[in-house]
Length: 410
Image 1 (cartoon, helix red, strand yellow):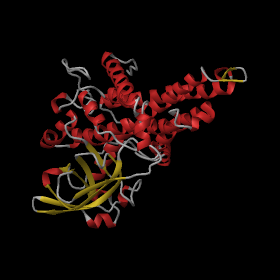
Image 2 (cartoon, one colour):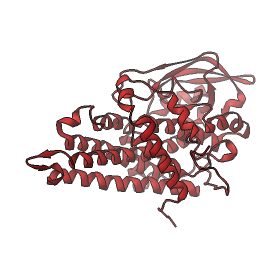
Image 3 (tube, helix red, strand yellow):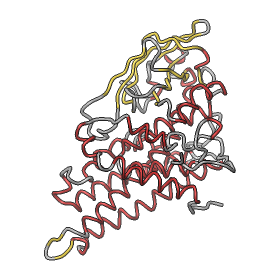
Image 4 (spheres, helix red, strand yellow):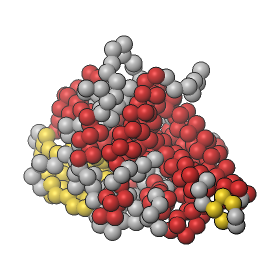
């Protein structure tokens, strides 16, 4: 039975993260956005609250909370700024949950534990200059030489590219299959920034998420031990799709936070701004916009909660997660646009946060599967042309522990 009531842990996490974001980030986010500057210290503060490993079991350095908790963290963080949620998406959703599910015990001890504790920052490298939605269009390669692999390739539009310590690198290990565009020739490796031949850079001039770090990284004859292969050779595509499913969940819950923030900003403005001798809250078309934001928020909140519940149960959830990501991102774009209209000319100025919401939310409509990709996926599921089946593994079900420190505890 699905129970949408938040338990004490959920409420504690939500309140802790909300207070943290309001205290530590909200007063400074306008400045960081204008300067297009990523504040590395924010990651350290998130780590102090155990947020970077919120849903990773305690045995691997995490806080041991469930996937609903991860969604709540993402919604609260993105209600302040998308750059905060992006950290959770790439570090926790795309990288750490992938290691937790697909990694060997040795890989978990070496990489997952310090990541969950926030001692090391991690990200995910799939997109390339010439390959985004077309994953098998990637050109990165790895060749086996004895007990090592030699990796070459460039990844683009990577969040935390110039900040992260650890990277998941997807590439071809079978050249013949690459020529045939057979995804079973792709593999996944763990790469460390300190490895010889690794370089990275930051992309400037972005439309949004300016307070976040987005960039590229390049591998030139980077040698990694065979122990850094995740799964088996040829399972890279499956692992990439599994990781994207977790990333989509964080994007869905985060985008829901944008809808809520747009609604709240509009309500506050409508209750103070006066035109034609009355507060604009009394104008019917303003009410209509706010009502639509409220409906979109409630719907998207329920969609990601459903996906999170399925994850907690260890059930297949690709369809539900895709639906939540698709609807939350396109409706966050709509909510931010309507919020600017509620604010009128003021909404076009960065004196108010709604113009930043609109710039930020556009990226989420593109990454972790564009709106077009998710539209086709949902249609194929509805038409029976696509069947949901596990790549090899589903996310392990949530396993609560009897004794656990609350997020934010010393």
